[in-house]
Image (cartoon, rainbow, N blue to C red):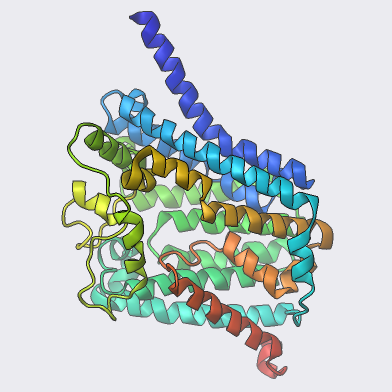
Length: 431
């Protein structure tokens, strides 16, 4: 039995190692094929979040399961994710290989000549979107918690007082992200990038989510790479220390077990897998994916809108009534596809993960243009500004499902166009 246990432990370790290493290895292949630096605006956002992913994989399960990361149900879930990762990575690899042979998309886009956006007009647009963020945030904070209370405790407001003001919170998250990216595009030095990051960080803190603090920091480093600036180790270490302190303080606890319990994404998913395997629940047979569209309708327009739909159907099994109270525990891995159609759903979604493939295609177009035309072309060309928003804007279009996301993109597009064609005035010169 000892030999068999050691054998299974080794298999489980390889299962976790494969899960952790597959995406970074694809990024190295991606960079090598395109002839760009391994540390680029696309890869840095993934590499920087690897410690968080490690916490998801190891810290959370180690305190949620009796056998820790060796729990068989958890390992089965990781095996399903490895299957999903492998399929979508293979499809993405074929896509990159094909696109790198002939720059069809890039040459097609370059035929459209937009009026370039100068730095001062980019800053003007950034100010306009920041103003929209302020309005949306004030409405959100004042809805049920009170503006002063939210300012004193953003985490409490984020967790308990978004109900009913969800659309305004979603607007606030997207608009500050757009403003941040445009301000970074207008920057032309490391000092301006750092100043922009420092100016936005307190407002990002008001959103109440720890993840945004990290993402906004990573995005600043990504822009340093876009402009070809060298990133000093001391700068990264100092920023990492500040961000780590802010994140830990936001947990409100110094107990590692309490913090590890927060990383329950895979644990929640494993609980569903175990319940299904034990016959305690059934698959949803498409109900999760088919009801996601309900999230696109604001509750203000549909007062009777159900609280349980899409992914929250899983929540309701283990946390009855939590969705109605505004709590939506997260799930890790391809559990939504599995909960709908089992292993077949995981395979199908792995082959047709359009969100991931779209990200890879946008990264391909942006990185090749940075390589061939330089940052000055990308920062003034409308299409590549949109690509930068889609790739790097933290939280942009979060909470906006089809067709509402198209409405937000249209609003951003019209505003950018207006900033480009608006007559030059003293106000624009001031911006």
